[in-house]
Structures are given as C-alpha cells and as structure tokens.
Length: 274
Image (tube, rainbow, N blue to C red; front, side, top):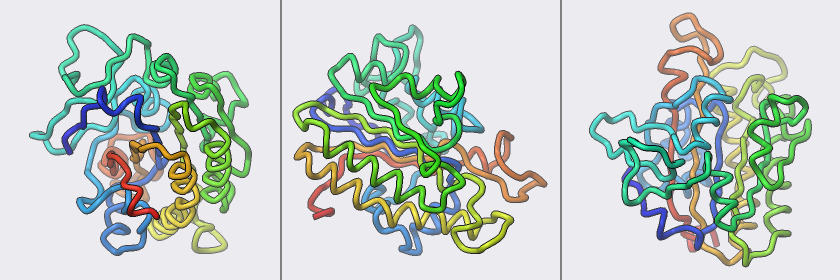
C-alpha cells in the first residue's frame, strides 16, 4: 500500500484514526473474506487488510510509536516503507516527500499546531485517565473521554464508543479540521461474552467482538459524512493476541499472533456510505 501525499491531504481532510486494540491479522482477514464485516470493508477497500508488523507487543509502546509517526510496518520486505507522518529527526530513512513532517514530538500535538481539534475516545486501561500512566497518551489531545461503558468489560462498548464519538463529531464546528482517535476495546480480553455466557476467550469470541465493532461503525461514519468534509482514515490494530499458539496466551510476547496486525488507510468515498 503506497502512501498518499499527506502534505496535500492535510489540513483539508478530517482524520479518523481507529485502533482496533488486540485485533489479530488472521481473524480480521477471515471475517473480511467471509463478508461478515461489511462496514469495515468500506474502509479497507477491495484489497482488504494489509498484513503489517506492529512496533510494540502491547498497547502502551505501540501507541507511543504510532503517535511518533511509526505506524505498523509492511510485512512485505519489498514494500514501500515511507511513513504517513513523522516527528522531525535527522537520519530518518522512512521519511519522504509524501510524509507529513512535524517539528513537534508527536503527530497529535503536530496536528493541533496545524489547527486540528484532536479528540480521543479511550478504550483499554491505558486510556482511562485514572492514573498518571493512563494519562500519558490521553493528555496529548484537546479532549479525551473514557468511562467504564467504553472499556473491555462492557459488551456494548463498540456501540457506546462510536455513539459517543458520533455525538462529539456532530457537535464540533465543521470549519475546523478534526482528528478523531478511537482506541476500540472490544477485541481485548475478556471477549467471551460476545458469543457465550462464560469464558475462556478464544478465536471464535475474538471474531464475534470484531463483528460487533463492525455493526456499530455506521453511526460514526454518518457523523463524519454530516460534517461535509473529506475524510482520511487510518484503521489498524496495535498488536494481536495469542490463544495458545506456541504455548502463549495474551500479548506482550514475540510470536506471530501478536506481531502480525491488520492495517488499512485511505480517503473515504462518501458515495459508498450514502
């Protein structure tokens, strides 16, 4: 997937940045191929999900890297590695003519400096703002929101997160460019309750959680469409999750189930969402 010229797209486009926390690449592809995630398929396009490698094996380091401009890296060794965004530093081999380069230390503060309103809808614990650590990422934004109903223990978290985000998107003035970042919590453990009453989590419940996210997505897209501005999206996972592969369960370890993540970016064609 070749990068677009972000210097031409911004600030004329709004930015929707969806991080599908813990989503495995293999599960995302299987659900896409089966036609069970039609709304996410509008974002991924005909090519579907691209296989990439995460820069971090759990949420905190992955997002620190993302916000510095280091999105998941193409798994294909011959792929173009030019980045969409970068915080300026000497010797970067992945910064090119299409890269939006910021003097600020991270993308979020850089977008704020360019006139964007930056909105964060938190999901997993690193976004709950209840401790100093869980404010490190959220404090980068103009406004950040989290509640228990957005978190990993709530079965309705996809609907709650997207409905709240849609409300904020509708309330914000369309003349100001918007970057809306959402850490989507549903695929993170526990997720068994998306298909059964008791655990443990498994690939089946992981996939069911993704379908719940897809079902809730149209309300958010409709809110962006109502702003009357073109939209650029980044949709990806921060890391995957192991369900017994090589004896591991969870993440924060170096196995393919964790390192391989789905990725997509592009301009949303509103004709497909009308």
